[in-house]
Picture 1 (cartoon, rainbow, N blue to C red):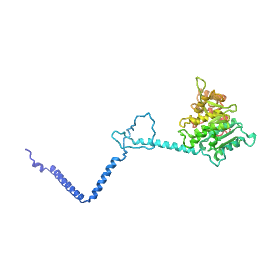
Picture 2: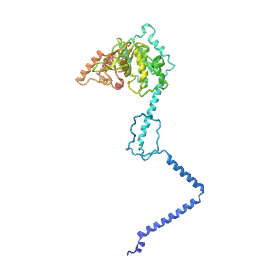
Picture 3: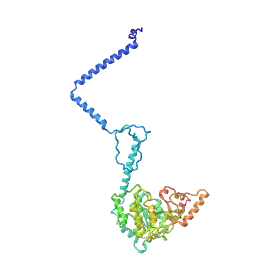
Picture 4: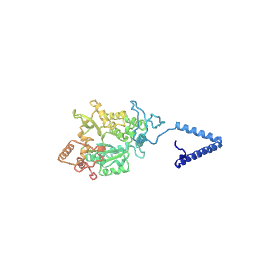
Length: 439
């Protein structure tokens, strides 16, 4: 039998046992002291403690719990798409997390904020756009200024060809491209009158920009539009009133762009004349055209136009087709579809009224105003390359000079392109500019 007395005299076993015994004795005495202190406390303390525990329990049950730390590698789980449309509320509610609820990654929260911020910016942009529509009372009435400009001081100053251009953009955006358009107009039509319908250009700085033309005897003026007067007695009037009242959804497309689409139609209907975009370079006189629209594209099989454009419009005053265009704009306005209220609108209406009695107009081929469409405009800015490309440039330039009355620069696609020496655009600028010192 093993001798147990050896263990009691073994120092490696004796001291740990002694230490455990003393620790147990200390904890026992400490517990007795704590309990004695608690029993001496007043009853009100225990009542407050109970209330605190109840409140804490209620808080943990009913509080909104948003977790702070989740793995960024776990994606947000979304329910399957529904076939019914639902409105996105401006507020986002979080429920208490259940066992089977999806994990919400905090990295997705900015997506929700982006939707709200985007909507806020769009509304703010729309309100800012509406502010620019109100006429400034310090300017004389639109119709009086326009009438005085068209009639002049004598019969020799009256405008035989009336050109209109709209500019619903900041003044600083009216640059070399736009000035080139004005130069080309007066190079081909030195006796014409140009009215730039614009609030930003109808200013002291705008007058300075146009002063070189006036000094050289050209008749050009910038006048702030009076939308109520210009739209009066057309479908545009009711549409514009609804817009001002906030009953028209402006959509994602620039409100200024869509107003320009409507403004050009109403100006031509009320006064008659020629409308051109500010990125049109005129190469020949338009005097032979009357009630004319330019085709942008031709169907290869049928040889008929497939799309028209509204960057150049030539019409008599009160022409019935213009009234149809304005009516279509007011009834089918959509601010979210690019071109819906512009080129596509013109194409829709013309396709419906073609052949009807009472509409007298002509559609000229793309070569007249749009010798290249927006997809091919870059080719006109390129300089000569190899022998094959150089031959193409010469051939294309000969074709444009022979068949085209204007060239649309499609600024949205070519605005940042440089004019390369020896390019087709370089050649066109040299023949169409007046001052020829800034391009």
